[in-house]
Amino acid sequence: MLRAPSIRVFCEWVGKHERQFQLSGGLRLTWSAPRRLPWLLVISFAVFVADRLSKTWIVAHIPLGGAIPVFDHVLRISHWTNEGAAFSMFAGWASAKTVNHTLTVVNFLVASGVLVALILLGRRISLVTVALALILGGAIGNVHDRIAYGAVIDFIEVHINIYHWHYHWPDFNVADSSIVTGACLLFLDSIRSHKKTDELDAV
Image (cartoon, rainbow, N blue to C red):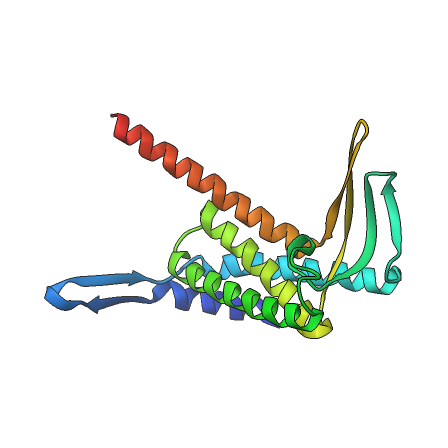
């Protein structure tokens, strides 16, 4: 576990490093160190810890297939395993082993790509970098489950009841919530960016 001095030293090291790259034609590309990267990784780590603690509690206190009602006919804390993707997508499409291996690779590649994006964009805290940090933490949380258990542990069970219409939302977990929240923030940022572009074009 990193102690506070170690984190401070790492932050100082990151903050001092800047590189210039010479390109063809005499062009220079300056790469600024991702000074805020350590704090963004703290967000990812917090998501991972929350995901692990919640799942550990579920496994210890609720038998597989069991549930604890929170709000009758609306919300239950359950215990299920999911061989598919987030919200049980792709579950049952092929053998559980094949689906799990495929999604493990996909999630690992996504997490790697998001980490690279964080390194490139980590000079400041923004809506995009926070979103990427949330996605990274959630992806790592679900990859851990697939490697350790061969499936993802889901435990948040939501039922939507509107008059005579009833829908059971696929069970999910903290990691899924973090990934979806991050994706929503990216979508929100894209909307803001398009709006700013439209305003500049109108001037």
